[in-house]
Structure formats: structure tokens, C-alpha cells
Image 1 (cartoon, rainbow, N blue to C red):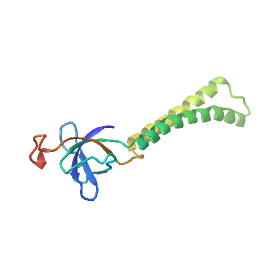
Image 2 (image 1 turned 120 degrees about the horizontal axis):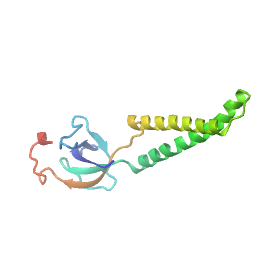
Image 3 (image 1 turned 90 degrees about the horizontal axis):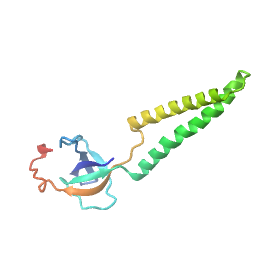
Image 4 (image 1 turned 180 degrees about the vertical axis):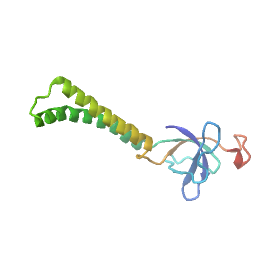
Length: 143
């Protein structure tokens, strides 16, 4: 997700504070360590655009697609296995029901995992928007 951020520090590593829609820096006290893969000339006080790491986005996409699909397939075969435990044959309705149950459970797990944010990468600086002076901001408290 692309967001605006204020560069808080560039000493040991680049630390940014994300800017919310009201123009305030959300995490000014601790900041977020960020990568600068394009070697842009960022300075403390610059307003930049940060984006998620592309590898992390790809992993999230693969997990959110493949996990529910594979769980649905597992539900199809689980219907036959569970029916054989009760010495019955699994009909098409029971197989479809198990596919839907497994799909619903796996989609719920993917949703919860994405909300908890367990798969995180460092944000990457994509572009420099402006410096604090060119934005007309003179004091730190304005952010």
C-alpha cells in the first residue's frame, strides 16, 4: 500500500513516520526503518512516498490464493474419507458441503492473518515528494 511519510532520521538507517490523512505523523516516537533501493537523496524532513516490499506483496498474494484453493481440494477428499469412516459413500452434496466448509475456514484464516499483519517487510522509499521548506512547514509540530 502506497503512503506518504516524513523522513525522521537518516543517520544509521532511514527512519520514516507515516503521515495520516490529517497530515500528522502517526508514529513519530519510534518511526519505521525503511529501505531506499533506488538510492534516492533523502534528507531528514523530506516527504517521501513509501510502498510495501514487492516480495512481501507476492508472498501475501500466493498465500491468499493458494491456501483457500488447496483447502477446498482437501475438503473434497476429506468428504470421501469421513464418509468411509462411517461406512457410507460420499455423495455430491456432501462433497460440495465439505468444499465450502474448508474454503470458508481457510478464507477466514487468511483474513485474520492479514489483519494481524504477521507477514511484514520493511517499507521501501519509492519517490521524494518535497522537503519541509518547500511544503511551507517550518516547525516539527506542524506534522
